[in-house]
Length: 381
Ligand SMILES: Nc1ccn([C@@H]2O[C@H](COP(=O)(O)OP(=O)(O)OP(=O)(O)O)[C@@H](O)[C@H]2O)c(=O)n1
Ligand SMILES: C[C@](O)(CO)[C@H](O)COP(=O)(O)O
Image 1 (cartoon, rainbow, N blue to C red):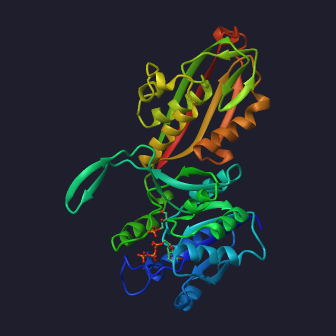
Image 2: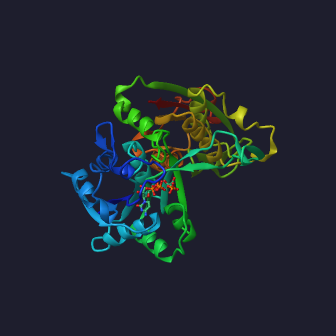
């Protein structure tokens, strides 16, 4: 089995209140758990981890779906362990661990986590924190907290099955989620773009918001679709390689620039900023600032992706054309697409890298430098 999902549903939903645990309450005419299961059922078999008292409710919710019921434990981590143990007889290569209380999870998020797992031991969706953060005591603000580098964690969190099972077995307990367990075992975890809609139903007010998302799936709403373009040029100077779309390509000369001069990645980054009407790389990472000297362009691209995500957009696709006589891009295009996809959390078929010569005309034809032009499409439901 390539992939299995463990959906933890043994909690009591005390903060949500209501007559029964939140996962068995109806939302948009179906139990919360049913919505969650239907999101994963087309992708892989599912282990649904339940509280022993909920068996009858669970059996009704799983009708017709590829779901095995397993009894959970007193805390979330224990329930995850029960799910992992249930898979031991026929272990999958990858496992997705998801909260039943996130019924609005989209195929896009699930696919992004799975795609990232092709190259990373762990992957999980998250949203960059965009509000200011304070510390407080009672009704008083007592301080502020730097929000840079802070993310709101979501599920599904994906891992290689053997790794996460061993990590859970070794963990002393008390972890907030499976990413914390994985990291404690030394596994690195890649962040893929989360989605505001992938909320965890926690308090009573969350039902209404989740119902709104479920009743109006993306294709039925007026979507905000944005296109951006980016163009960049770097000149050649002395050196023995060029960085293009995240890949080191051997060449008799190097591109000159304040950063690593990755002209392709810069064009894509500018396309994203353009779609957001957020200026260009120079505005966010001024060349006059010495801290960006020699910087890996991945930093810029990640920033643009996080900005798009924080504004509620998902990236539908990117397309970049490199204009140069040399080096030849064809042999490296697949690696470039894989690397750009990894950084952006995009599946392979949403990333295009291609190249053309300029028929020996102009500065690219004279091999004085390389130009790149890129397009990005962003979508907000
Ligand atoms: N012993 C537990 C506790 C939690 N969970 C699951 O972990 C997820 C995230 O937990 P949370 O939102 O905190 O759910 P509850 O524990 O049900 O909520 P509360 O804390 O309000 O009681 C939920 O899908 C929940 O069913 C679980 O499987 N086993
Ligand atoms: C795993 C989780 O969904 C990540 O956001 C979350 O930590 C689980 O819910 P809880 O409210 O923290 O128990």
